[in-house]
View 1: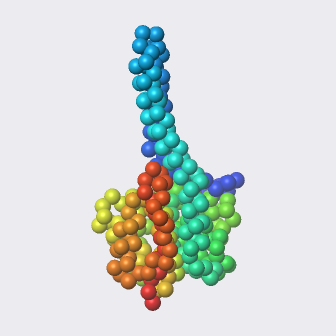
View 2 (view 1 turned 90 degrees about the vertical axis):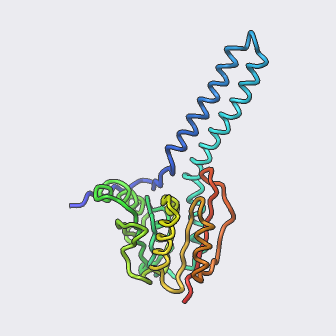
View 3 (view 1 turned 60 degrees about the vertical axis):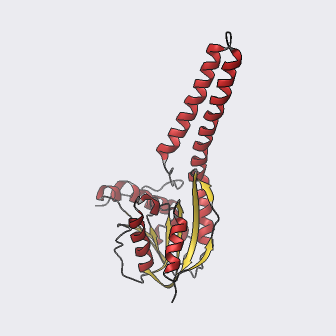
Length: 251
């Protein structure tokens, strides 16, 4: 029997790159403390040099800690705001069949589900083990869907974005947030992008929000005849160039 999904009082979409964020905070704190320690040690015999070291190291420490805050804010505030901007840029009838590729905890899938009427459906796909699906990421996505009141419109499945287990022209809308960049090799990212395009119906829309490579995705899609109908400028989220866009597939 499947484990019962916990209903959360509030949805939790997690912290992206938590180790990098913690490392920035830790390094910032240690650098500031080192500068302060050097000043204290030298404040009697060499107060001028000690203060100069403190100013330099203190500013570096503050900058590192600020980077950690930017990463925290990007995860807790910005990604939900930009999720809504992206989904608002898509046309909605309410009965769409939507695929969220690399859905994680379900941020995009749940946002899409809120825009659907009774006939609409969202499938979230990601790579999870059987254990994950009963108690980790897949479970978190469904718990978030219940917390947001859309669990009846959302289903999560196990699948590799480079080999999506769906027929061509299956979905009205395909979305993907902060997932493609996890494929380190450009050829693998190309495969995943081609898979998203394959399962999208003619006339349908693909929306991608990602760090570093969004320009490459747009250029690749335009070579296939895609129309880029909306796009952002370069955003500095997670201390990394970040962009989103919406592409329309020709009939």
